[in-house]
Amino acid sequence: MSHTSVECFVLKSINYRDADKIFTLYSREEGKISAAARGVRKLTSRKSGSLDTFNLVRLNYYESSLGYKTITDTVALRSFRNFKNVPNKVSIAYKITELLIKNTKEGLSDLDLFDSLYRTLSLLDDGSVLGTAVFAHFLINFMNSLGYSVNLEKCSFCGEHLSRKWEGVWFNPDRGGVVCRSCKSFEREMSLKEIALAREIRKMEEKSYRFLQKDSPELMRVRDLFDDYTSYKLSL
Ligand SMILES: [Zn+2]
Image 1 (cartoon, protein in one colour):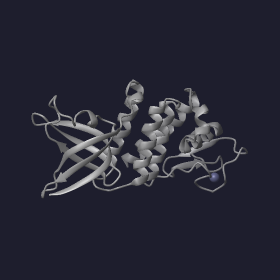
Image 2 (cartoon, rainbow, N blue to C red):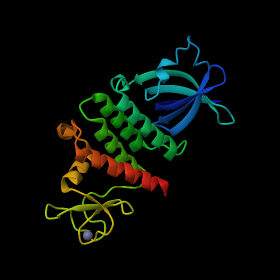
Image 3 (cartoon, protein in one colour):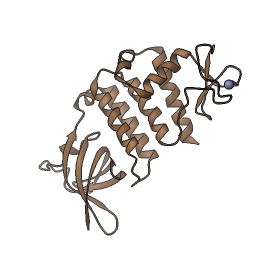
Image 4 (cartoon, rainbow, N blue to C red):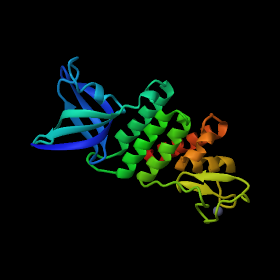
């Protein structure tokens, strides 16, 4: 038996046997892993609270010769209490964890993705940015980490740099980027303002927070654009 310590987010748990649970975790050290916690559903268990979904925890596990992991002890590092009281933010967090569960491999570490998840949950918890913007931010960075980077800088066909001279912008999901008027065919049209907003959302610097505090038609269209792009690429 080998003992290992990891820092991880709790993505999901399912009940197992009478008092056990099996957790799906996303760790800094090993990417996605599954591990069981014995007796965690008993009221007296000290582990149960720190293993709430979305928590960041430091935990130790041992691995059997067959590769089954069992959690031995845990320490909660962050529990993101603020957003857990806001139903629409909780549903965003569930969508994010579902994307991670479905589209990442067990045991494959990705530090950028771990950091992006940390940033996303911190932004959700912060309260100064709308959940809609935080979700779009995660989607752009998540797609990037899966190798589907998004090009918001120049025409995906002719390479012309996007500027104010463009009288409209289109988005091509196959190319994962913007398209100019001369190159467009059946792409979805976006406004220059929406693409500028999408760039702010990708970086999500503190100076852009003020644009992202109230829902606007532009913000929803940017969210929908990346939501559709994600579904399209991941369904191929
Ligand atoms: Zn072009």
